[in-house]
Image (cartoon, rainbow, N blue to C red; front, side, top):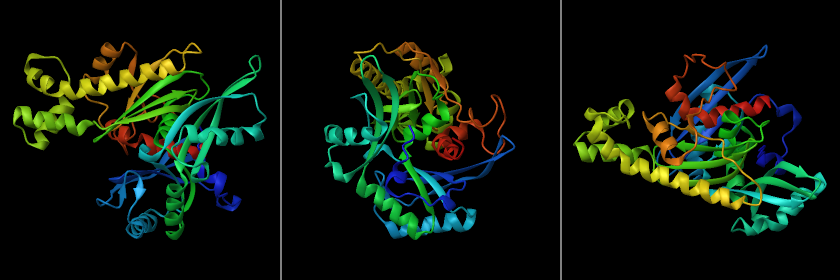
Length: 357
Protein backbone atom coordinates (compact mmCIF):
# COMPACT_ATOMS: atom_id res chain seq x y z
CA UNK A 1 0.00 0.00 0.00
CA UNK A 2 1.34 3.41 -0.86
CA UNK A 3 -0.30 4.91 2.24
CA UNK A 4 1.09 8.28 1.16
CA UNK A 5 -1.12 9.96 3.69
CA UNK A 6 0.40 13.41 3.79
CA UNK A 7 0.80 13.89 0.08
CA UNK A 8 -2.94 13.81 -0.53
CA UNK A 9 -3.46 16.73 1.82
CA UNK A 10 -0.13 18.56 1.98
CA UNK A 11 1.38 18.33 -1.53
CA UNK A 12 5.16 18.64 -1.51
CA UNK A 13 6.82 21.02 -4.02
CA UNK A 14 8.77 19.14 -6.69
CA UNK A 15 12.06 20.77 -5.69
CA UNK A 16 11.78 19.11 -2.26
CA UNK A 17 11.44 15.58 -3.60
CA UNK A 18 14.95 14.45 -2.64
CA UNK A 19 16.11 11.36 -0.78
CA UNK A 20 14.49 11.15 2.64
CA UNK A 21 15.48 9.35 5.82
CA UNK A 22 13.08 6.80 7.33
CA UNK A 23 12.07 7.58 10.92
CA UNK A 24 10.42 4.81 12.93
CA UNK A 25 8.75 6.74 15.75
CA UNK A 26 7.45 4.97 18.86
CA UNK A 27 6.63 6.09 22.38
CA UNK A 28 10.13 5.10 23.53
CA UNK A 29 12.46 5.98 20.66
CA UNK A 30 13.15 7.14 17.13
CA UNK A 31 15.08 4.71 14.91
CA UNK A 32 16.35 6.21 11.67
CA UNK A 33 17.70 4.75 8.44
CA UNK A 34 19.08 6.36 5.30
CA UNK A 35 19.64 4.29 2.15
CA UNK A 36 21.74 5.51 -0.77
CA UNK A 37 21.81 4.01 -4.24
CA UNK A 38 24.99 4.20 -6.32
CA UNK A 39 24.94 2.55 -9.72
CA UNK A 40 22.06 0.28 -8.80
CA UNK A 41 23.67 -0.86 -5.56
CA UNK A 42 22.47 0.17 -2.12
CA UNK A 43 24.63 1.63 0.57
CA UNK A 44 23.69 2.51 4.14
CA UNK A 45 23.92 6.20 4.94
CA UNK A 46 23.03 7.43 8.41
CA UNK A 47 21.43 5.05 10.89
CA UNK A 48 20.85 5.04 14.62
CA UNK A 49 18.41 5.32 17.49
CA UNK A 50 17.63 7.99 20.05
CA UNK A 51 15.56 7.45 23.17
CA UNK A 52 12.50 9.55 23.88
CA UNK A 53 11.86 10.64 27.47
CA UNK A 54 8.67 9.21 28.94
CA UNK A 55 5.61 11.31 28.20
CA UNK A 56 6.70 13.09 25.02
CA UNK A 57 4.72 10.64 22.88
CA UNK A 58 2.00 8.41 24.30
CA UNK A 59 0.19 5.87 22.17
CA UNK A 60 1.55 7.58 19.07
CA UNK A 61 0.16 10.97 20.07
CA UNK A 62 2.52 13.92 20.64
CA UNK A 63 1.93 15.13 24.19
CA UNK A 64 4.88 17.53 24.46
CA UNK A 65 5.37 19.08 21.01
CA UNK A 66 8.07 21.56 22.01
CA UNK A 67 10.25 18.85 23.60
CA UNK A 68 9.71 16.62 20.56
CA UNK A 69 10.68 19.51 18.24
CA UNK A 70 13.96 19.99 20.15
CA UNK A 71 14.82 16.30 19.70
CA UNK A 72 14.13 16.58 15.97
CA UNK A 73 16.33 19.67 15.78
CA UNK A 74 19.17 17.76 17.46
CA UNK A 75 18.77 14.89 14.99
CA UNK A 76 18.73 17.31 12.08
CA UNK A 77 21.83 19.15 13.29
CA UNK A 78 23.82 15.98 13.92
CA UNK A 79 22.84 13.94 10.86
CA UNK A 80 22.09 16.73 8.37
CA UNK A 81 18.82 15.41 6.95
CA UNK A 82 15.99 17.67 5.85
CA UNK A 83 13.48 15.23 4.34
CA UNK A 84 11.74 12.40 6.19
CA UNK A 85 9.27 9.56 5.82
CA UNK A 86 7.79 8.50 9.16
CA UNK A 87 5.68 5.73 10.58
CA UNK A 88 3.44 6.01 13.61
CA UNK A 89 2.52 3.37 16.19
CA UNK A 90 -0.64 1.49 15.31
CA UNK A 91 -2.49 2.61 18.44
CA UNK A 92 -4.45 5.22 16.46
CA UNK A 93 -4.40 3.74 12.97
CA UNK A 94 -7.20 1.81 11.28
CA UNK A 95 -6.52 -0.73 8.54
CA UNK A 96 -9.26 -2.55 6.65
CA UNK A 97 -10.32 -4.20 3.43
CA UNK A 98 -13.21 -3.12 1.19
CA UNK A 99 -15.03 -4.55 -1.81
CA UNK A 100 -16.44 -1.87 -4.12
CA UNK A 101 -18.24 -1.75 -7.45
CA UNK A 102 -15.95 -1.41 -10.46
CA UNK A 103 -15.33 2.35 -10.46
CA UNK A 104 -13.27 4.87 -12.39
CA UNK A 105 -10.01 5.75 -10.58
CA UNK A 106 -11.26 9.24 -9.74
CA UNK A 107 -14.40 7.79 -8.11
CA UNK A 108 -12.71 5.38 -5.67
CA UNK A 109 -11.68 7.90 -3.01
CA UNK A 110 -15.22 9.28 -2.72
CA UNK A 111 -16.73 5.80 -2.53
CA UNK A 112 -14.42 4.88 0.36
CA UNK A 113 -15.17 8.17 2.12
CA UNK A 114 -18.91 7.38 2.06
CA UNK A 115 -18.28 4.11 3.95
CA UNK A 116 -15.34 4.98 6.16
CA UNK A 117 -17.36 5.80 9.29
CA UNK A 118 -18.41 2.13 9.36
CA UNK A 119 -14.77 1.20 10.01
CA UNK A 120 -13.34 4.22 11.83
CA UNK A 121 -15.14 5.62 14.92
CA UNK A 122 -14.76 9.25 13.81
CA UNK A 123 -16.71 11.60 11.51
CA UNK A 124 -15.38 11.43 7.94
CA UNK A 125 -14.03 15.03 7.96
CA UNK A 126 -11.81 14.10 10.92
CA UNK A 127 -10.14 11.20 9.11
CA UNK A 128 -7.11 11.11 6.82
CA UNK A 129 -6.90 7.95 4.73
CA UNK A 130 -5.19 6.41 1.75
CA UNK A 131 -5.91 3.26 -0.22
CA UNK A 132 -4.39 0.76 -2.61
CA UNK A 133 -6.32 -1.13 -5.28
CA UNK A 134 -5.65 -4.82 -4.74
CA UNK A 135 -7.62 -6.40 -7.58
CA UNK A 136 -10.30 -5.74 -10.18
CA UNK A 137 -12.81 -8.23 -11.51
CA UNK A 138 -14.61 -7.17 -14.68
CA UNK A 139 -16.75 -10.32 -14.66
CA UNK A 140 -18.35 -9.33 -11.34
CA UNK A 141 -17.92 -5.57 -11.87
CA UNK A 142 -16.07 -5.27 -8.58
CA UNK A 143 -12.74 -4.22 -7.14
CA UNK A 144 -11.06 -4.65 -3.77
CA UNK A 145 -9.01 -2.05 -1.91
CA UNK A 146 -6.89 -1.93 1.23
CA UNK A 147 -7.40 1.21 3.31
CA UNK A 148 -5.25 2.80 6.03
CA UNK A 149 -6.57 5.72 8.09
CA UNK A 150 -5.49 8.03 10.90
CA UNK A 151 -7.28 10.76 12.89
CA UNK A 152 -6.68 14.03 11.05
CA UNK A 153 -5.61 15.87 14.22
CA UNK A 154 -2.86 13.28 14.79
CA UNK A 155 -1.48 13.79 11.27
CA UNK A 156 -1.67 17.58 11.52
CA UNK A 157 0.11 17.48 14.89
CA UNK A 158 3.11 15.71 13.37
CA UNK A 159 3.07 17.91 10.28
CA UNK A 160 3.21 21.06 12.41
CA UNK A 161 6.05 19.87 14.67
CA UNK A 162 8.18 18.72 11.74
CA UNK A 163 7.55 22.01 9.93
CA UNK A 164 8.70 23.98 12.99
CA UNK A 165 11.81 21.81 13.14
CA UNK A 166 12.56 22.61 9.51
CA UNK A 167 12.19 19.01 8.32
CA UNK A 168 10.12 18.30 5.21
CA UNK A 169 7.70 15.56 6.20
CA UNK A 170 7.05 13.82 2.90
CA UNK A 171 4.80 10.96 4.04
CA UNK A 172 3.27 9.26 7.05
CA UNK A 173 2.30 5.61 7.02
CA UNK A 174 1.49 2.73 9.32
CA UNK A 175 4.18 0.49 10.74
CA UNK A 176 2.64 -2.40 8.84
CA UNK A 177 2.92 -0.54 5.54
CA UNK A 178 6.64 -0.02 6.06
CA UNK A 179 7.24 -3.63 7.14
CA UNK A 180 5.31 -4.96 4.14
CA UNK A 181 7.49 -2.88 1.81
CA UNK A 182 10.65 -4.33 3.34
CA UNK A 183 9.53 -7.95 3.73
CA UNK A 184 6.88 -8.77 1.11
CA UNK A 185 6.78 -9.00 -2.68
CA UNK A 186 4.07 -6.72 -4.01
CA UNK A 187 4.09 -8.43 -7.40
CA UNK A 188 2.94 -11.72 -5.92
CA UNK A 189 -0.76 -11.94 -5.15
CA UNK A 190 0.00 -13.79 -1.93
CA UNK A 191 -1.31 -13.69 1.64
CA UNK A 192 1.30 -13.30 4.37
CA UNK A 193 1.02 -12.55 8.08
CA UNK A 194 3.78 -10.38 9.55
CA UNK A 195 4.27 -10.73 13.31
CA UNK A 196 6.25 -7.84 14.79
CA UNK A 197 7.37 -9.10 18.19
CA UNK A 198 8.55 -6.15 20.24
CA UNK A 199 9.52 -5.48 23.81
CA UNK A 200 6.09 -4.52 25.18
CA UNK A 201 3.63 -5.61 22.51
CA UNK A 202 3.16 -7.81 19.46
CA UNK A 203 1.57 -6.39 16.30
CA UNK A 204 0.07 -8.72 13.71
CA UNK A 205 -0.51 -7.67 10.09
CA UNK A 206 -2.28 -9.51 7.29
CA UNK A 207 -0.60 -8.55 4.01
CA UNK A 208 -2.21 -9.25 0.64
CA UNK A 209 -0.16 -8.55 -2.50
CA UNK A 210 2.17 -6.32 -0.49
CA UNK A 211 -0.66 -4.31 1.08
CA UNK A 212 -1.75 -4.48 4.73
CA UNK A 213 -5.48 -5.23 4.90
CA UNK A 214 -5.84 -6.17 8.59
CA UNK A 215 -3.86 -5.24 11.71
CA UNK A 216 -4.12 -5.83 15.45
CA UNK A 217 -1.91 -5.25 18.48
CA UNK A 218 -1.57 -7.64 21.41
CA UNK A 219 -0.22 -6.11 24.68
CA UNK A 220 2.31 -8.91 25.23
CA UNK A 221 5.95 -8.84 24.18
CA UNK A 222 9.46 -9.95 24.97
CA UNK A 223 9.59 -8.10 28.28
CA UNK A 224 6.92 -10.42 29.68
CA UNK A 225 9.06 -13.44 28.74
CA UNK A 226 12.06 -11.93 30.52
CA UNK A 227 9.95 -11.11 33.58
CA UNK A 228 8.77 -14.72 33.83
CA UNK A 229 12.36 -15.93 33.74
CA UNK A 230 13.40 -13.45 36.44
CA UNK A 231 10.57 -14.56 38.70
CA UNK A 232 10.70 -18.32 38.12
CA UNK A 233 14.48 -18.75 38.19
CA UNK A 234 15.37 -15.93 40.59
CA UNK A 235 17.55 -14.14 38.03
CA UNK A 236 18.33 -10.48 37.60
CA UNK A 237 17.26 -8.76 34.36
CA UNK A 238 20.60 -9.14 32.55
CA UNK A 239 20.81 -12.85 33.37
CA UNK A 240 17.21 -13.48 32.32
CA UNK A 241 17.65 -11.55 29.08
CA UNK A 242 20.82 -13.47 28.21
CA UNK A 243 19.14 -16.82 28.92
CA UNK A 244 16.14 -15.86 26.77
CA UNK A 245 18.30 -14.85 23.81
CA UNK A 246 20.75 -17.77 23.95
CA UNK A 247 18.55 -20.72 25.00
CA UNK A 248 15.01 -19.53 24.30
CA UNK A 249 12.57 -22.39 23.69
CA UNK A 250 15.20 -25.00 22.96
CA UNK A 251 13.97 -28.33 24.25
CA UNK A 252 16.75 -29.78 26.37
CA UNK A 253 16.97 -31.11 29.89
CA UNK A 254 19.24 -28.26 30.94
CA UNK A 255 16.77 -25.70 29.57
CA UNK A 256 13.60 -27.29 30.95
CA UNK A 257 13.04 -24.79 33.77
CA UNK A 258 13.57 -21.82 31.45
CA UNK A 259 11.27 -23.37 28.81
CA UNK A 260 8.49 -23.88 31.36
CA UNK A 261 8.87 -20.30 32.58
CA UNK A 262 8.67 -18.82 29.09
CA UNK A 263 6.00 -21.00 27.55
CA UNK A 264 2.91 -19.33 29.13
CA UNK A 265 3.79 -16.00 27.47
CA UNK A 266 4.82 -17.58 24.17
CA UNK A 267 1.66 -19.69 24.12
CA UNK A 268 -0.47 -16.59 24.71
CA UNK A 269 1.18 -14.84 21.74
CA UNK A 270 0.72 -17.96 19.61
CA UNK A 271 -2.97 -18.21 20.58
CA UNK A 272 -3.56 -14.58 19.56
CA UNK A 273 -1.86 -15.09 16.19
CA UNK A 274 -4.00 -18.16 15.55
CA UNK A 275 -7.20 -16.45 16.71
CA UNK A 276 -6.67 -13.39 14.53
CA UNK A 277 -5.62 -15.28 11.41
CA UNK A 278 -8.64 -17.59 11.74
CA UNK A 279 -10.93 -14.57 12.15
CA UNK A 280 -9.45 -12.79 9.13
CA UNK A 281 -9.71 -15.94 7.01
CA UNK A 282 -13.41 -16.19 7.86
CA UNK A 283 -13.92 -12.57 6.86
CA UNK A 284 -12.76 -13.46 3.38
CA UNK A 285 -14.84 -16.63 3.08
CA UNK A 286 -16.51 -15.40 -0.15
CA UNK A 287 -13.23 -16.11 -1.90
CA UNK A 288 -10.76 -18.92 -1.45
CA UNK A 289 -7.84 -17.63 0.63
CA UNK A 290 -4.67 -19.46 1.52
CA UNK A 291 -2.19 -18.15 4.07
CA UNK A 292 1.24 -18.81 2.54
CA UNK A 293 3.43 -18.07 5.54
CA UNK A 294 4.00 -16.16 8.76
CA UNK A 295 6.99 -13.82 8.78
CA UNK A 296 8.52 -12.85 12.13
CA UNK A 297 10.24 -9.52 12.67
CA UNK A 298 11.06 -7.19 15.54
CA UNK A 299 13.74 -7.21 18.19
CA UNK A 300 12.39 -10.30 19.98
CA UNK A 301 11.70 -12.45 16.91
CA UNK A 302 15.01 -14.35 16.87
CA UNK A 303 14.18 -16.18 20.12
CA UNK A 304 15.68 -19.69 19.66
CA UNK A 305 12.98 -22.29 19.06
CA UNK A 306 10.23 -19.71 18.50
CA UNK A 307 9.90 -20.42 14.75
CA UNK A 308 9.51 -24.15 15.36
CA UNK A 309 7.02 -23.63 18.18
CA UNK A 310 4.77 -21.38 16.09
CA UNK A 311 4.97 -23.56 13.02
CA UNK A 312 4.05 -26.70 14.95
CA UNK A 313 1.17 -25.07 16.81
CA UNK A 314 -0.34 -22.96 14.02
CA UNK A 315 0.25 -25.41 11.19
CA UNK A 316 1.67 -22.83 8.77
CA UNK A 317 5.21 -22.20 7.53
CA UNK A 318 6.98 -19.66 9.76
CA UNK A 319 10.21 -17.80 8.95
CA UNK A 320 12.22 -14.96 10.47
CA UNK A 321 12.03 -12.19 7.89
CA UNK A 322 15.18 -10.66 6.47
CA UNK A 323 14.68 -6.85 6.47
CA UNK A 324 17.59 -6.48 4.01
CA UNK A 325 16.03 -8.74 1.37
CA UNK A 326 15.31 -5.81 -1.00
CA UNK A 327 18.47 -3.92 -0.12
CA UNK A 328 21.37 -6.39 -0.21
CA UNK A 329 21.85 -9.82 -1.84
CA UNK A 330 20.73 -12.78 0.21
CA UNK A 331 23.40 -13.81 2.67
CA UNK A 332 25.24 -10.49 2.57
CA UNK A 333 26.90 -9.44 5.82
CA UNK A 334 25.91 -5.93 6.86
CA UNK A 335 28.72 -4.82 9.13
CA UNK A 336 26.94 -1.62 10.19
CA UNK A 337 24.02 -3.54 11.67
CA UNK A 338 24.17 -7.21 12.78
CA UNK A 339 21.15 -9.26 11.71
CA UNK A 340 19.56 -9.46 15.17
CA UNK A 341 19.79 -5.66 15.43
CA UNK A 342 18.50 -5.24 11.87
CA UNK A 343 15.30 -7.01 12.94
CA UNK A 344 14.60 -3.96 15.12
CA UNK A 345 15.07 -1.67 12.11
CA UNK A 346 12.62 -3.34 9.71
CA UNK A 347 10.19 -0.41 9.81
CA UNK A 348 12.93 2.20 9.28
CA UNK A 349 14.33 0.16 6.37
CA UNK A 350 10.87 -0.11 4.80
CA UNK A 351 10.41 3.66 5.13
CA UNK A 352 13.78 4.39 3.54
CA UNK A 353 12.86 2.13 0.61
CA UNK A 354 10.08 4.57 -0.32
CA UNK A 355 12.77 6.59 -2.10
CA UNK A 356 13.25 3.81 -4.63
CA UNK A 357 9.75 2.66 -5.55
